[in-house]
Length: 349
Ligand SMILES: [Zn+2]
Image 1 (cartoon, protein in one colour):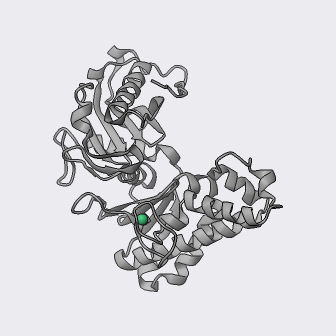
Image 2: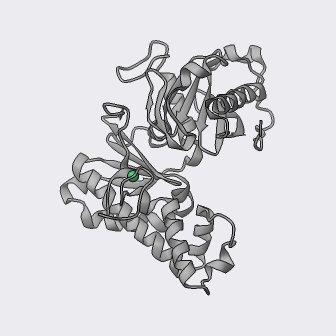
Image 3: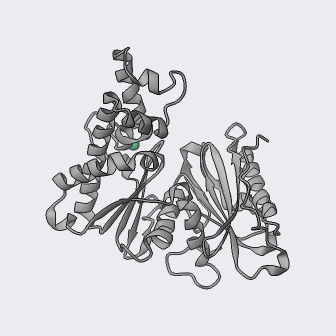
């Protein structure tokens, strides 16, 4: 099994088993390229992290094997045993029924109708919770970053795709079939570029990193002397950090495309605000992590032009500081509500 680079825990954080007083969970962010597992206390300390490459070549078996390995490794790194762990919280990029643990569709993992909880339970003797990854990130941001600020929140992650999650009245809104929050598939340009979902002109097909890079490459082809060839390696994939570097160097193509994407994002956020009268919009994902300084003011500008003043007056638009860890923190929130503390919309193990 291909194993990725390991994260070494901070020195001195190894805990002797008899010293365990706190409750611990393993929080997992299951992505299409890597499985990131963290051993965390319920208070939010990260004790250890492990990363395993996601195997997509061997179907469900490959996914479960990688997952089992990441979970076991991180527990071992923390010098703990399965019985010391309260729960495994699993964030999955797709539609998930958190009550049954069944994934409806997860294109990045190449699975449909797969009961991940049931399958993983064959190998891991710890209560397992499964949730959509952006929903988890929203829970993490709400509880560990905003700490009480914001009651009606939209969280939007801009990276390979564009994902979203909604919190109404301080509670995660999952929708009738666990599909709520898919702002990435809001159509913002009639007959626009084709989206992975089959429709044309989705927000994701215009403002995701994939879409931005596609448009930049198209322009680079036309202008052979573009500065981008000096800044960005020609045959390497263009990542968000590369785009940030190009902005710093004032590259006109990158600036133009990012400005366009920011404008479309701002309009989409205004449409959602007009519908839902939110009080907070939190932006995250790889693109925001590298480019929020450049993009957020432009998003706000376009938002203000479109939003109805009564709906938009109280809305704060901010970028999350939790980065990749937002979903990991969300795992704690999900796990904190098991064992009798469950609220009516919280899945039980
Ligand atoms: Zn779409």
